[in-house]
Length: 205
Image 1 (cartoon, rainbow, N blue to C red):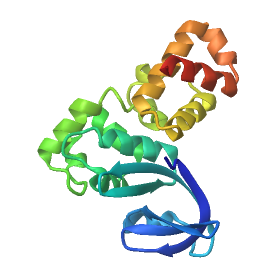
Image 2: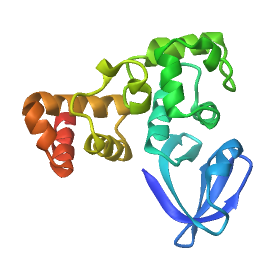
Image 3: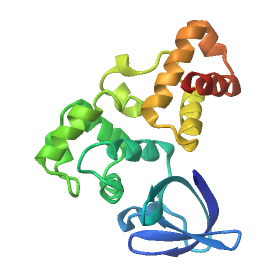
């Protein structure tokens, strides 16, 4: 499974990119509406990758930020939302704004997104409200109680590493919560990132 790519941005297409990595061109789905955030053709680019394997396809979906990849994974758990629709949704809204809309049942904002009708917006709020706590910007503006106590850059880095290993965002946060409970608040706060990740992987077994 491909978790990330670093290489030369070889070509921008309407719905995808070609990334040259050591002479091999990888086609990565990336909506045109979000391509203004990318460097120019011929320059180096780094993308977080979600690999989606189907019977007739092996597709790569690219993201500039790990929180975008996390939100993409969550969106794909909702009935009626597939990978391509999830990409178009995220091209029109940041993960923080998406999380805030879900936390506040903001159906008006959600239904302005491409492909999202009222029923889909209601499902998003119902199914994801307790799963969007990985977006710190959204939580600070809504419900601090949903954050993981002791959360800092180490926690975000650990979540990103677990995502790159293929674990869903919800399971990654559950593992970190289990590590905190076992280590205690002080032990958790003092734990280096390497140990935090090791303990989290043990909790996921």
